[in-house]
Amino acid sequence: MSDATELSALLRLMAWLSPAFPIGSFAYSGGLERAVHDGLVRDASDLQAWLSAVVDHGALWNDCVLLGEAHRAARDALGLAACAELAEALAGSRERHQETMLLGEAFLTAASAWPEVTAAISTAVAYSVAVGATASVHEIGCEQAVAAYLHAFVSQGVSAAIRLGVCGQKDGVAVIAAMEGLVAGTAERAACSTLDDLGSATIQADIVSLRHETQRVRLFRS
Image 1 (tube, rainbow, N blue to C red):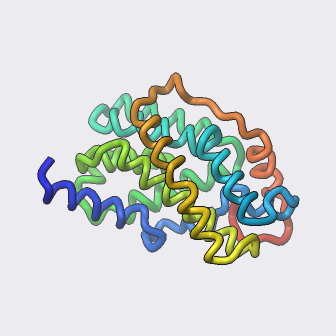
Image 2 (cartoon, helix red, strand yellow; image 1 turned 90 degrees about the vertical axis):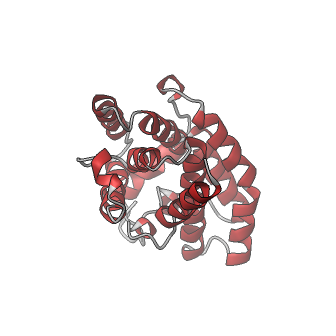
């Protein structure tokens, strides 16, 4: 890959996974709001532990595996459809399903500014599948795409925590810095994964995602 192509890939990843990309990710906390409400996440240390668990062996790990599968299947209509169906089925709660599907739809709508996107996906898919297939069509490496996806998740988690009063901006940035190694390692691991590597073990995170559905006062949609 030429330097110009690598730079183009970097710029596109920065655009697609930027907080400013119009997909509405700021409206979701992935269950973090309920975890704060229940006293499970009280400070920056708790936040880092929570985000790390979800990335390392929770729903985000599954997202990374599915992103990798979508990346490989981007030019295989049947394979991509099967991946999309599995990703939707793995949503563990109503809000988790709503979040991943609406973010996927919004991502594809916004990314249609790059015409190659619509050629790869013609139906609603989960967010991870949309990112993986789009990155593949643009010849962006799987590991780089996963790393950017995870960085966006961590950044959004920190932003949500700041809005919820868990920590300030300085401590929030420290969490992002501290998780850099985990993000890089998970991206490397996910790039070599297969669907056999799907699986999560974050029961508490799944429970708070369900409990958030009945939370009466809230800032976030999940």
